[in-house]
Image 1 (tube, rainbow, N blue to C red):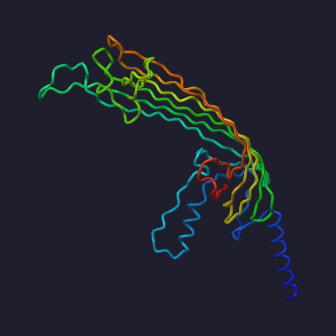
Image 2: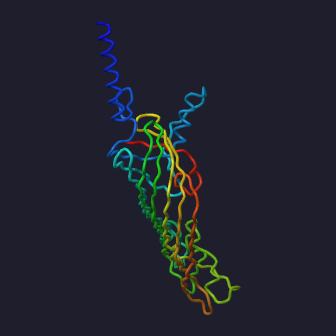
Image 3: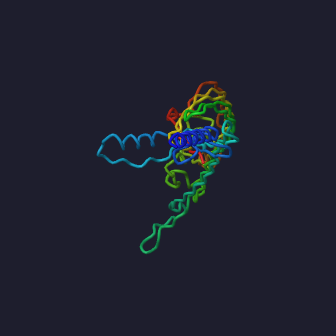
Length: 308
């Protein structure tokens, strides 16, 4: 009877081991440890989480603030995710869609007011406005192949990224320029370069007059990058892994000419005038290695990936 019980126990143990091996690694609770078909995944900077865990076991009596989620690459601020076709193949996605519009107003004394107001008569005011719009679009995709049957998984593949960015500042002023109303004292600077040296408003560089900017548009930047990568990650918990990757890629970018418009009062007799500049364009090309797909500072850290 004892031999029969031992035989049954060994058979059940072998069956459980076989089912676990055939269906992938599982935790003691039966949870799948490795990613499976149709799983999604997102990645973050792992350093805040590691610091938090390290402080828990360091014996420190100081405050241990909860970790915050940081970008894998702060220079691009893109969301990095995956969709698993099966346990050995994943599609990568890189996305950033950023559009901003900021609007500020400021009251400025009415330059046409000729009589000093006395109480209770108010000081006449006009309104200057500043509007700033910007955009950053980053879209990328790739494919990832995986190796390994244990918690330690290796991966490799390729991906491409396209990005477009631009910015424009527009200034509108309540006090119109005239032969008697100049820039100085009648214009809000908004803490920017809204008012500047206007030496370029004349053919004589030595003749410097105050000017104010009405339009400041940065040239649109378009970039394209293609890279291959290889890396590894370790699953500390079911569907939660820490890893990093090396990459090598080629990147090109081009920034078109921008536009800047200024207005001022000058000449003899004095009269308002406007001039438009075209700012310089630029381009760049590079082929180099990277870590975690980043090109800026802070991109050499480990990354943590959650699968669900």
